[in-house]
Length: 66
Image 1: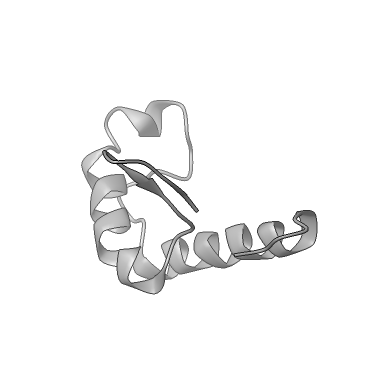
Image 2 (image 1 turned 90 degrees about the horizontal axis):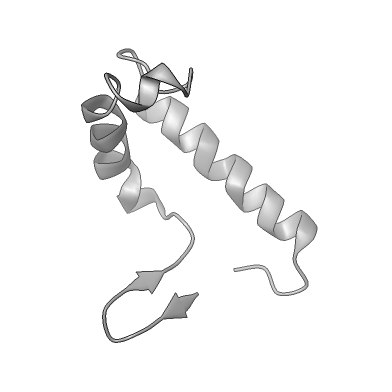
């Protein structure tokens, strides 16, 4: 985790799912033009799969997994 007085950068956690899905769905008209995964049918299951992928990548490629 990286933190400062103004922000905190940390891995995704399960409680982030609703806000993450909401952000993707709100961005489909813009982000969806370049990122095919950002589509109107994006689901919580899609986000959970992405979170799991990110966690696996951290664990595979990090000497200090979070």
